[in-house]
Length: 353
Image 1 (cartoon, rainbow, N blue to C red):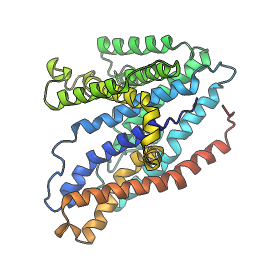
Image 2: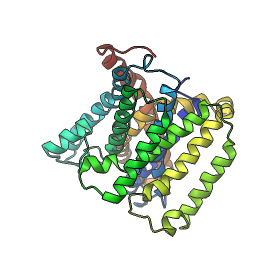
Image 3: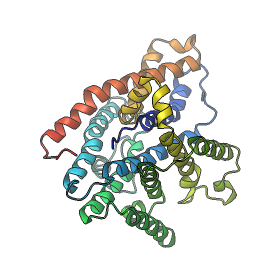
């Protein structure tokens, strides 16, 4: 089974663009014509991260489905996952450190003048109470933990029996809710966001088992959930979950799960009618996610130096920023991300599966 299902690749692109819009607002406020946010609210765009988490679980289901332990080597699985995450991340982390040094810590969504401990946890993505230098990399810590969990399942030969994963996730989250641990590693291991990865595995397993689900129904439910959130009638509002451990799961995780399900089961239709550029943006979504903070800042500096904000309105500025981010992500994917993955795996023994 291919892990690159076209509809899911397209959705990855949309999710990354949603995150770009969040950080674009601040850039437009600083460099735009009106000196204020272009988008009145980008709150629901945060669900782009949750879409990524659900998709990660989905991919794990695709990779391991019907593969016995003899076909799926534990070390190979883990190496392929970490080489997907770290090499290109390190490149952009180093570039951001250089950028912050040159601009005296003025890059948005980054930590200026980090201490040695912050640098260490940023490069390793180890659990920590501090945010990493590239603040959005907090999500990668969850990705790494989920890969470790799946690696242990493969090592124990239990990866085909998904109920072990479901049980582990539920037990860990319940324990976290009861014990409320303060240690960084335990907070990570018991965070309700773990359930988003698990939901992704469940959705992927349904798809691989040829279950028939109505994508229109699931996409409609996601739209309803989003509307309820935006109008203050969501479950998070009703049960006062804002700021709680389950708040993000309810506000963004649930809509993200329904969106992923809808896109997955509409794959045939989406694959037939969607332009190729959308799947290419999806392929480059990780590069887009990692690079957009730096690219937005540099693109805005160019806009400012040319004094374009004096006669071009902010929506034009937003289009320009979006196109620059997308263009760079495609370049980054082809000439940085993919070569780095190939190079890192060239010197590590990996079986083909």
